[in-house]
Length: 211
Ligand code: SF4
Image 1 (cartoon, rainbow, N blue to C red):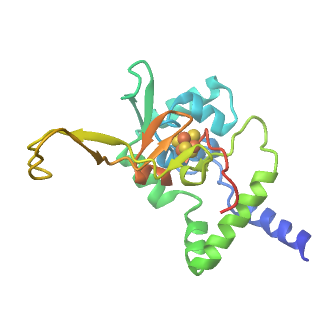
Image 2 (cartoon, rainbow, N blue to C red; image 1 turned 90 degrees about the horizontal axis):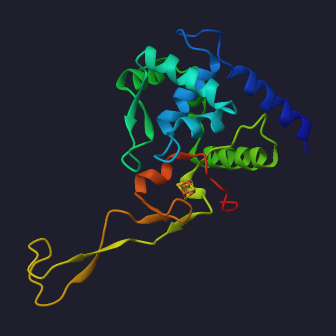
């Protein structure tokens, strides 16, 4: 089997994905942070989670955040889950920058030319290889929520509807249980997860097993 050839191709791909110095005024770490925050879920858009993702100290992550804020690509908002915490939000300007100038866009377009079956196989193979490699420094491998061990699928949360609710028509007595928007639940964070959030990155991700 062409094992070495495959690894050499991986090395070539990694080299092709390297960000040129100071592209659009940002260093590689700042591009990486912006790209991550644009796809991170609500638990991972904090300065601490960003530091873990980048494998840096909190002080370095703070500097990265400040640079992105100063350029108008990032904004801090109070977290709806904890008023003392901040949520790092990519601004419209930041999203536009990623869409038009992210140095990995060329690779995104190249992968998009593959047929879907090949794209899934490539993703799964890379996931499998990366999960067996030690991350450099203290960097965590953030994963997509839908493949996480902690995701409780099909655990729809329920709410009650009072009698006479116009939404559900006439209910004669008592209350009934209805499905709410959250169809998933995170057992680690003990919080509901909306379907669209299962496609986002999380730094607390634990692989559930091969897909
Ligand atoms: S289920 Fe896993 S990936 Fe999803 S929010 Fe919870 S810890 Fe993060």
